[in-house]
Amino acid sequence: MPKHGKKYIAALEGTSDIPRSAGDAVALVKTLASAKFDETVELHVSTSADPRHAEQQIREVAPLPHGTGKETRVVVFAEGETARAAEAAGADFVADDELIAKIEEGWTDFDVSLATPDQMGKIGRLGRYLGRKGLMPNPRTGTVVQPDDIADAIEEMKKGRIEIRLDRDAIIHVLVGKVSFSDEQLLENLESVVDTIVRAKPSGLKGQLVKSATLTSTMGPPVKLVIDETGGTES
Image 1: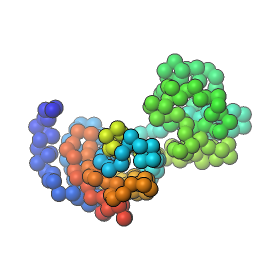
Image 2: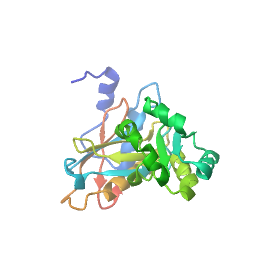
Image 3: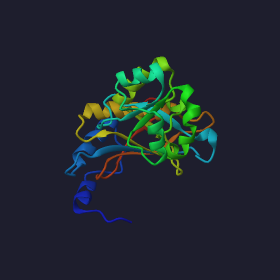
Image 4: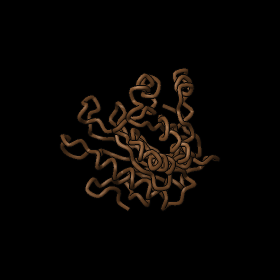
């Protein structure tokens, strides 16, 4: 078990085992953040889903109204007019054969990739490099888009969105912003993520999806969070 420093232990004394409303949890997490850098605020949700069964997998994308707190670098796999439209819409990279070869050599200096359907056959071999990092375009995550929608998709990615997925222990780990965000910004991001998780409950899962939830900053202690599956977080 890792040893925690004096700041962490002191901060831990300011928490309790009582689950808190979203508003109270956000305010407390910000208060307990003591690092000299702008800590990330993270949500960790333990679920009753069984990731060993395909029908109980959860993989969704939640929009973050106030972004992630960092610039999102977007790669677009497209050709012709669509590629030019992607450049005009602010794509950081529009992939050509040279860039595809660079990715095969291990380059992944971007945060999200978009592709038009006609490119999926061409870039299928990139799945072995991008799939394990969650960077491969996928219709389920809204990253395979029609040519006419490419500009809107780039704008959405730039605003901020986050992928939600179960790990092997049936836990969802997802960031909701930075400590430097206002309480209102963090709360709106958090509510968007929680609403997405609640809606993603597998249809065959009986009982509650959420077993427990905590909100924390990068270096801070966890704060228990109330999640009402009928209405999201308690404000």
